[in-house]
Length: 404
Image 1: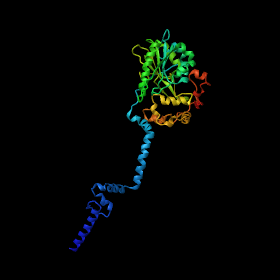
Image 2: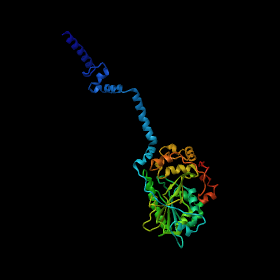
Image 3: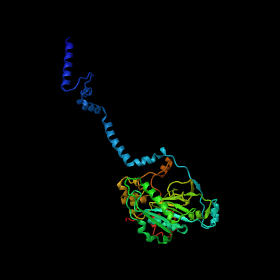
Image 4: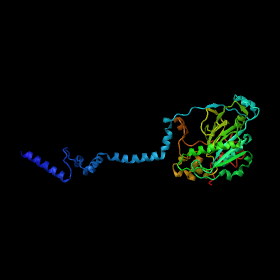
């Protein structure tokens, strides 16, 4: 009896202690006060329960979590684009392969023999050729392009806007430098178009708007059915012998993409031979539309050069990085730092710190890192080599650019 009274007395004292703490009695047998608090159900005991949970976690695990979460967040923020590009093969299949047409050329061959080698017939007279481009600020590359194509182009057509594709105001650069192109004046149809300056709009919408306007300028230039029309950006330069071949041969495809050697920054950094967006068309009224995407499966091999970001001045690099359709790749302001840009150029690295845009892990891994230096200046545009001192920044061993 005395034992039961002792137990009752202890229990009563314990309940009194709990009552004084403003809680409820916990029937679990434990010597841990915190665990007793965890059994409480009043709103005042929530912090106590949180305390219990935290006490139950290992201190090293807490430190690991507190470090891991911020590190992962920062890693995704800094390198999320790389992760996306690297995993591209998981959700995007490579495009259908082109039907590549072998390209035959030698300086001493007759046009009849060259057409025959390609399985085509020679014409009695050549087709007229129209070269149409949208112009931004590529004065030096435009000079190389027009000098290369001059012997075989009937009419040069150039459209310039006071807006970049990204909606930024820009000066009329060609108009300001027109004196440099006097040799082309008799064959030039030049037009300007006002930008729409719509903030936040997809840059490809403005680009498409300007390409539609170029269609109208071609009509003003006098293009007609069966004329050849070159559709390519300024820095996608067909070789002159390619254009001469296509204007003299019959039975060629109505639409033909041109495979170009793909360079970056200058002819020192050969990326690959896979540039294909340039194309040449037999013009058809009401059907032919100026575009810069895949329009056929036919691809003529080794038909010229694509020299991307091949500028003389660092300021021109910065302008294009902010102006062109992929300006969203400038994710951090330090990408536009002139010293960084100069270092990237000389290393053959990527201006936007991106992984290669490929469709297989093999190709992505194979092209990771800087583009190897090339020391060949063979089979380049003839005007470039004839004026090597003026354009030495485009030749191997001359990666340093002018600052202004």
